[in-house]
Image 1 (cartoon, rainbow over the protein chains, first blue to last red):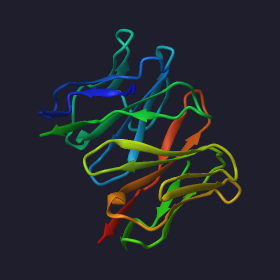
Image 2: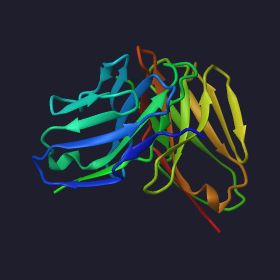
Image 3: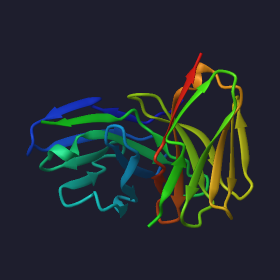
Length: 115
Length: 112
């Protein structure tokens, strides 16, 4: 069964360093998303991406964040200068369509720890 | 701003009992999803509810949606230990590409 994959599963970095989180969405999906979940809290939307551009982003997704689809399969989230409060689980999701039956399928997550 | 609230936040129940988790949301939407999350794991899709009055059942779980009341329920029948997890509802707001606004989560603990 097709699934969303993410690498790495755990990333430890020093404050101020750049990190890139990688995702491979389900192959025929067109819509891509990043969410994050701070430990013990709810899941928060970061950004949605369609047709090689950002569709929508939240207030959390400031200038330190960027997303890219560098090739036909990968979808990346870059944090330019990490802060302590960026420590969280980051989930990638993809869907075949938007809204309606556009069920989002989530990857296993990358746990980011900023020291 | 869309707000999605769940209650209870924590539920401890004995095996064999029934209970309902409630999900209220603040803005009109007719698309609601339920997810299950085990500790340290990802989100597993349970139900997709796409219209007013939608009811879906899978095993001991049944979800319903009342868009007029802006309320969804997740009913657990005869709980078993394997259902212990955190359950999130998520509301889908219409847009170019849907974003999900998640509820606060309900941590369910089923005791023997």
